[in-house]
Length: 375
Ligand SMILES: Cc1cc2nc3c(=O)[nH]c(=O)nc-3n(C[C@H](O)[C@H](O)[C@H](O)COP(=O)(O)OP(=O)(O)OC[C@H]3O[C@@H](n4cnc5c(N)ncnc54)[C@H](O)[C@@H]3O)c2cc1C
Image 1 (tube, rainbow, N blue to C red):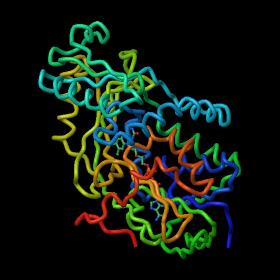
Image 2 (image 1 turned 180 degrees about the vertical axis):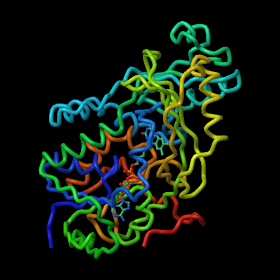
Image 3 (image 1 turned 90 degrees about the horizontal axis):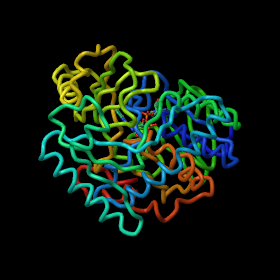
Image 4 (image 1 turned 90 degrees about the vertical axis):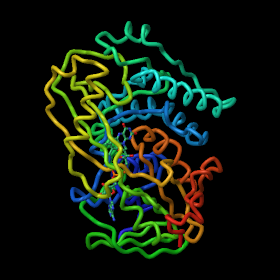
């Protein structure tokens, strides 16, 4: 039996950020990961640190996303210093382009609601009309009616982030155990035993961060994580000269020069195949936004599965039945990496979630016919 201060199940972006945060708080965590056979949103995502549309009707989620965006520069800097890996963070703000007058009006209403719901916390935004936008973004297509802008948004390299978190975790004394699937667990308050890959591991704390795997694991720990897959498809162009000074919601240029076009939202279960009609739609919208994109070759395309809670908002919980067991589930693991490493992990390290996390509990689904209750 190997003993640790904490076990984190799942070494995607969520588990890795939390495990790194635990190691930073002085704990010796072990991270167990299923490996290449798994559905891994962390390797197939779009790389946005995106705040402007997060938390409509849920100001706690808006604040959590903003907190994360605020923590991102410190996370990127410390990962860079510790590992030498540049995670490619740029946070110049972000624009969400609108096609046609109706989209622009809808977006304006949404941004107004976000600001209203932010209350004293504040929410800075602007709706930018087409004429001004065309000066900012040469080559803008005639179908673009304008854009919303907030100063909070940015983008990063998700693969570099994942790599840096893994390396920093090990440098801080954490243990990474890949190619092991957790199938059995024994739970008692602050005493957890896990069987995975022939090893038995024990710890007084456990964090379930297994992405879509959380749905099955959670009941073993008196928790509920009713997440489902949502497919997203992405297209990537050949490298182009520098085009945009900031990310555009569903379009972003990587540091290497490729343009990423994304991404769809499809409820198709655990199906990761690509669909030409969806890819066509993604490309069509990109070309309407910037006709010159039609001249670029598409060099890569893929589909991946988001980890989607029933209402689209993250789920964070500590088990009432087995204190010491926590779960973290979200569909914005890049955006929320700052919060996971620098706010959520310290809460787990001290042993309880801050009251600000209460609205994120899966208890909000109690009584819902489609969501199984926690054990
Ligand atoms: C197309 C697409 C675009 C996206 N774009 C963005 C974006 O721009 N910005 C953003 O913030 N987010 C984005 N996301 C979401 C983001 O990628 C996810 O929120 C994040 O990657 C989820 O990370 P995770 O660690 O929870 O899950 P995963 O990456 O799925 O990792 C879970 C890990 O748990 C392991 N595991 C599962 N079950 C077990 C088990 N029983 N035992 C051991 N290990 C187990 C798996 O091996 C896996 O490695 C996007 C997602 C997709 C699909």
